Length: 475
Image (cartoon, rainbow, N blue to C red; front, top):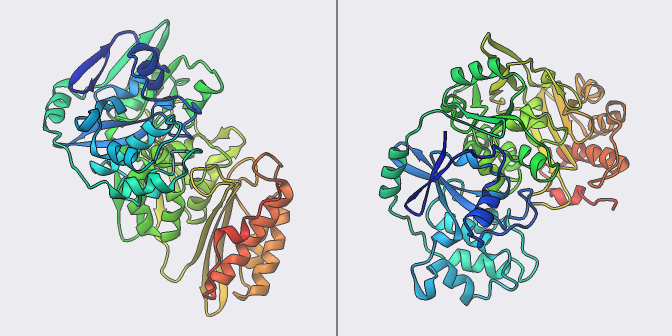
């Protein structure tokens, strides 16, 4: 079956597509749309930013994504917009591009198309773009002019919703059926329902599941891995459900972080702030809650916080479902409790009590769009000055996201005081023996983790302490 997508009003049809060919390579080397640049090829610099539109009801939901780690089959049934799609004004530039030029927002120009696409998404009301300009372009890097002139140009661009009626009609004509294809013996599938996904996995238990490709994309572009059978999850409607109740928030595994952000922030503001710092907007527009869990990374930002909040994971297969505490899913480095044919279906996060003492913090070398060196999460229940329950979890401190049993034991049944939290901070050395790597030494990680507990105490006493005050790396 061909991959069919919409580009500037034209249906592009591609037969026999390599399952892991990137959108960026196709744009540059097949279509000669060289305005989209290749910088890092890992979804970090934003030079390759494009907008992808998905039909949602009677509207098109546009999202800025990194073309370098989007695979071509992921475009099937969608619309694509590149920097060449813009223009129409003076000199062939639109109002935003004119503002960038007039404001001196570009020097070498290499990163400029990516900035333009991110900011254009903001002007047309793309998903996830209802943020300050600085947040919208946090996933775009510039080392020439700096961000000041770029932010000024973005802030000066007036909202300009576009007429997507022709795009809606064209996407409806493309259809939304399940798709599949084969190329040189390698196969890809794009199911539309969880039931169909379960059946496919039963038939192909070794298939690689790909949701946003924010992790798997790097296996291909950096690790040069060959994936023989790929199942793309982006069109599985059942996995995109967000359900808020008085007692919990349930997120389907396919919910993008950008789409989940508002509901997660309502669950707890610090959890919302953590999500705001997961990658750049392009990464949050593609990366999913379930993908962040399923891959089992020891430095994934989401799992430590969800573990501390007592989240439960539901796995599904053709044989049925099973539910477990999220912390039990992570067995060892690179190993998770997922049987052949199973996939992550949803995660349920209990709503914290209003009286709960919660602190969630991510420490990284760069504040925005960076990988965690340490990610810590604390959830305490305090009754009449005594800590009656405690859940403490960290990422970046062990081979998996892991609870701190000795630290929790040092807290439970003790007075909620600075002395108690100081002793509990020292107990972290019994829980973790972290490695040293480019993001931080073992000593740094242990000291920073302990300082996060101390900061919890200071915040509970109304003392304002910024992340940067506990984030002085040891180089």
